[in-house]
Amino acid sequence: MELLYAASVGLLVSCGVFLILRSRTFPVVLGLTMLSYAVNLFLFSSGRLSLNSAVVLGQSSEYADPLPQAFVLTAIVIGFAMTAFVVILSIRARADLGNDHVNGHVPEINNKRKV
Image 1 (tube, helix red, strand yellow):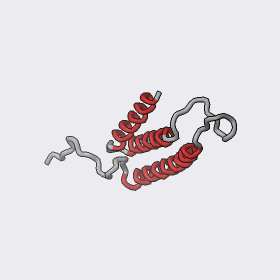
Image 2: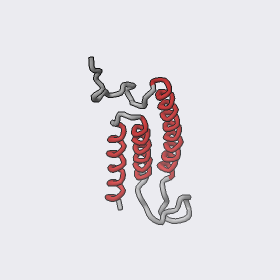
Image 3: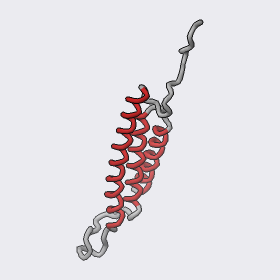
């Protein structure tokens, strides 16, 4: 189970990094979202994966650690705010620059003027 969990976190990180390196804003937003999902899964796994453990003390001999769960809830809120900010920033850049490239310049492919 841990191997599958670690592989899914690694897959999310690699896809997120690949999308962040794209030249358009929508893949960058998707890449940031995938990276935030990977961070949430990583934080959740830091509390050790356990089955049939009580959430509250006193219900069984073993209990789940509530600290990683609180970290994940905080990371979800921060990730949502960051995604909303990046979407608004990309909409504003599209309105001001007229394109949705990250660096603001459209790559010129065969757009040379004939004199």
